Image 1 (cartoon, rainbow, N blue to C red):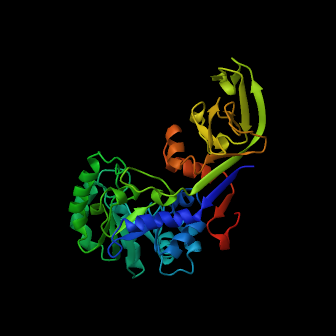
Image 2: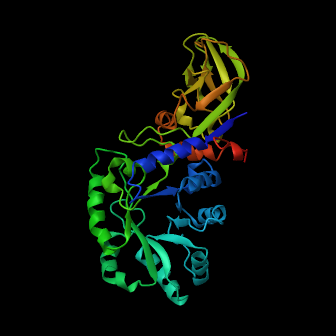
Length: 373
């Protein structure tokens, strides 16, 4: 009934756009594949990106990192990082397993650094890690007070091989926001705590903001999956396409209401098509009476409240015959993920992850391995 298609060629092209925006001889591109690669499917995304040359992958949690490990099990030149650091693990046995599996934490606190160092010493090994310094996000990363302590102790952590020192940008998608420049200034100062270690600051928005944010690695997620973040960014290719079907067509007389809460009143005799998709499939209720869909490239308004598994549209002005069973485009060539997010009063990330977990996925652009999963 409903069809969610993922265009893997678009993913490839988006990676190439990112690659062309960087200095390939200096700056690596790390792929953020958390939340099932933003809903498009981690396994497919990782295999495509690895084939294109990506060797650095970021998961959020231990579970995601283990899934990544399985996908990349025969690709020994790949690096898997956990953005959530040690993910709450503190006992010696679990930390040892974490390290033995080759998972690399982004260490976000002085306490995490001490735990990682202590276990490395116990096992008489040197463990890889990334040092995350907070520069204003106030979410994860070494905070100001801890940084002052860390400065005096950094040489004590000789059991850690620091691969990168990083921070995370809060407002790089807002080109006029001065916070990005402020964070850059703080990062330039604080990253000197590890003067010979590679640095990384730019997320997807930062990648296209200015090359001075690129340093030794950019960490891109949203842009890979077709999200456009500001007007300095080139046009990206749509990766996710969503279609549904019309299951009913009927007329409602002038002044009659449509759907729960009777929030829409027909201004004329109205031809209504009912479509078998709703908020249980990732469409948000706040697109009630304000969203649009497309049929044969013509735009039709959503009328009435979004139901759990149904929406209604006004097809009175259709310039062609519409029939039960006709396909309806929710996301696609006529309506991008950014446009859909805008009238949903949310961000494209939420659309991708909400819709991505609701359907079986059909992959296109990878004919050899195209399949339903």
